[in-house]
Length: 413
Image (cartoon, rainbow, N blue to C red; front, side, top):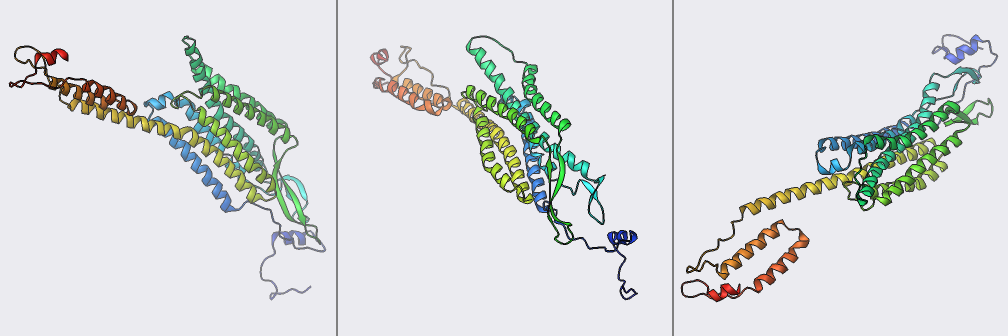
């Protein structure tokens, strides 16, 4: 072993210093280990997905507050639609803990790389992120559809009572009971999961160095002994929620869009199952590839939340816009009616006190114009057909030299 100033170029690293201090006969260099972390670019993409959904929900809530006095918004029961928007944000927020990752659960010996009994510094943070994923997914999803179910159930109750000519009042307390009826079971399942068998971050070594036996590649994931049982129970609660939403959507399918979203709720459920049918197999195949798994999972979370937001709120915005346009057209028609001159007054002719046929024809024409201004498109043809037949049956004008009609023509009219 030679030493000297010409060979010393820098101070020894920490691992080498610990090795020398321990008087180990051989101090091998540790090979590079691939931790299969999610790339920073993909994590930023996940944050962008969440930001888009947060802005969409914020816009939906702001739109409801701004148009709170509009007929469409008041009929849509905005308190429940606000819960839908909040639920979509909670559901999309799953991307945030999904982006958290760590190294080994326990600290490793600097020389032998064997695990010690000391927890790593980031273990608690990663464990909390692991358990936050099912909480955010289940609470967000159940909150979305429980709010829609409460809204549909309220409408269905009023509709059934109106058919039997009974007056009924559905209070907000009863509606909140419906929402809590779906939230409490899923909260109970998640609480039991957290207390009995919580998800924990574990890193598994997949490749080792042939000479030294040191790890060269490892994968980290959230695991639990009874995670499959609790996940299945949570899925059953969500499935019951979706099934009940479909039943109420079918019962209220004939209600106007201002009061019910039955068609769009059914479309959102079908849309959700389509995403699961496409995304879950890809997630299973890409389980060992952290980047692919993260992208597919984040994309499913974003598409579900953003798609539900569009399906629920876009028809309301369109209906409000169309209703506003109809009100503007109606006001324009009313203003045009006020500008039309009054029908010609009946004038006496030669002391007989009767109107001429020409004046009667003019009055009928002006009446047709007034009704066409206030009629819908489907009524215009019926008005023209009816008034045309009336005017066709009027007698021909027969005037004398003084310009007045004869008594016989007026008596015939």
